[in-house]
Length: 210
Image (cartoon, rainbow, N blue to C red; front, side, top):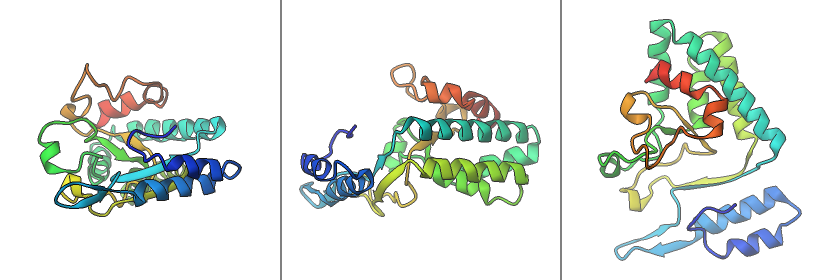
């Protein structure tokens, strides 16, 4: 599945590497991020960040299981007010995907959709948290990283006022830390009405942190 906006040249990248998924992913990412568009005043790449993910069912099951294990551990830890503060600080330190202040001011969704690897790595490094929570965060991060075949990001995406997306490898996790971040455009757009959110006990984590 190729996201909207990818240049048509990725068709050749796919066809030329049909037997090598990792090479295919790298070629697709190279085409997407190497293509520039004329914005009138300046030229810019087609995406702030772009990934090609391996959707192998076994790998996705591993991601689901490990994220659920981490979410459950975080919910348990959050019963301690000090641990809840630490977890919220870790999560808040990772910006969501709406990083342009002007866009954020419009209350767009995706502000709490934070790069999962960056968020989990931050939790895994936090010495304030238990060794069990940190270990589960490291495992969740690795399983998410294992589905990333290729990635490239922009350190200053011009259409978004030069916002930095240099920590955005891999898929996102919906990690709100305030009620207004949970589903800001519901019911027109829901970031929580999906199977992965339900199966990983993400709602329990949202209740604990937001």
